[in-house]
Image 1: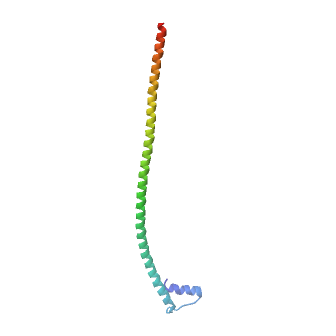
Image 2: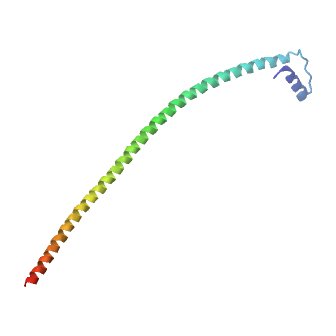
Image 3: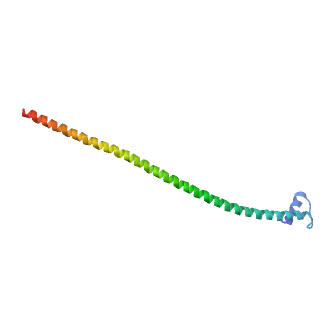
Length: 125
C-alpha cells in the first residue's frame, strides 16, 4: 500500500486528514518493507517446499511402482499356477475317464464274444 492510499483510507475511515510529512506515515514505509521481506521469504520457502515435495513424491511414486510390479508379478504367477493346477486336475480326470472307457469297451467286446459263442453253440445243438 502506498502512502496516498493510507492517507485516503484514514480520511475515509476516521475522518482525519494526515499531512504528507506526518511521522505516522513512516510506520507504513516500515511495514511495507517488512511485508516485502516476508514475501521474499515466502517465495524462497515455496521454492524449497516445491523441491522437497517433488523429491519426496518421486521417491513415493517409484516405491509404489515397485510395489505394484511385485504385486502384479506375484498375482500373475499365482494365476498361472492356479490355472495350471486346474488343467492338471482336468487332465487327470480325462485320463481316468479314458481308461474307464477302454475297460468298458473291453467288457462290451468280451460280452459280445460270449453272446456270439452262446448263440453259435445253441445253434449247433
